[in-house]
Image (cartoon, rainbow, N blue to C red; front, side, top):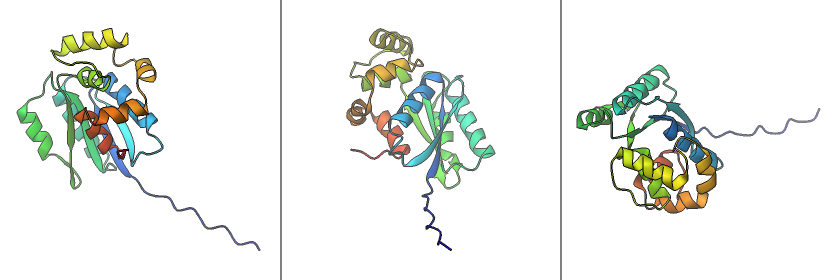
Length: 179
């Protein structure tokens, strides 16, 4: 009888839930996840809170973490332009998933602002201005993934990581090592 080959050992990855405010955040997180799939340090799952502001994202994240305790870490990715204030920030800081605090990555005033920073464009103004500027720069709205395939790649994201603190924080949470 031939002996069986030794079984391959699998490494257990820490699990991360990223609760995104809307479609644009989900599309971007999925792009980063795909782009760095070979080096992700955590098992990443994303959830769309379907808009309604920062408070809704926080409540959605807390509810999802409570109902599924399988996550080691929860990150909220939200805009600061709607229904987000110091009281909600404090509530988020106090919230925990197991031993880990919930982390919040704020897009000020909106995601388009830091997407423009990643692309090397100037970013000043309110949400409406940022969305208009983003559309003028890319030709599409932020939730349409085709602009990412055309304008972003691993090299662009690696370089932007040093300039855009929100991107660096997202990549750190996903377990993507700096190059």
